[in-house]
Length: 253
Image (cartoon, one colour):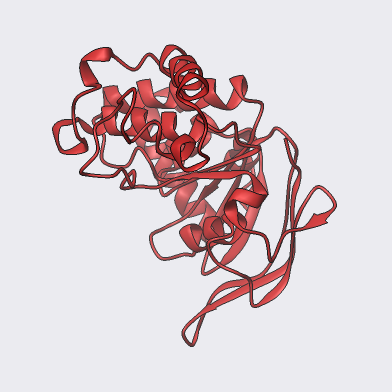
C-alpha cells in the first residue's frame, strides 16, 4: 500500500490547462472516489497518478518517493479503463497461449506453473466462470468484461488500483454486483484505490472519502456524510440536490 501525495500538480493538453495546481493526499489503503462531470479532468488525473502522463508542474509522491519519471510498472499501478481495454483477438484464458488474463504474466516471462497458480487464484477470488475461458471480449457481457479486466489487473498484485468509470455501461443489477467485486478486490489486495465517476450515488456507495471535481480542481473533499450535510458552494449543492431528488424517499423517512 502506498500513500499518494500530489503537490502543486498541473497538466496542459495542448493549450488547455486540464489539471490546475492540485494538492491532494490519499492515505495508504484508502478507497478514494473522485466525482465530477464529463470533461472536468478526472481521467487525466488518473493518468498522471498511473504514469501514463507526466505533470507539467508539481510532484507526485508514493510514500516519500517522487514518481514523476517512473513508469506504471515501476509504480506498481494497475488501471482499469471505462472501455476495459481488453485485447479483442485474445480469449479470456488459455493455459499455454496468450490470453487476456495471463498477458501481463507472459510479458514477465514467468513459467507456465507460476502463471497457472496466479491465474487460478484470481479466478477463484473473482468467481470467473470456466464457461468464459474460450470466449473473446466481443462475446462477453459488460459485467463479464469488467470482471476479466479486474482479474487481469490483479494478476500482478498492485500497490495502487485506479478505476476510470468501469461500471458506466452496465445495467443496475450488474453494477451492484461489480461494485461488490471491486470493494472485495480492494480489501483482499490491501491496495490504495482511486475511483472516478460522474455518478454521485455510485461514488457515495464506494468511497471512504470523496472529492468533487470541476474544471481540473477539487472543489470539496470529505466523507459522503460531510458533503451531503455541508456542501461548500452552489456547484456542490447542485450535485447534492440531484442526489437528494433521486433518493427523496430515503431522506424523508
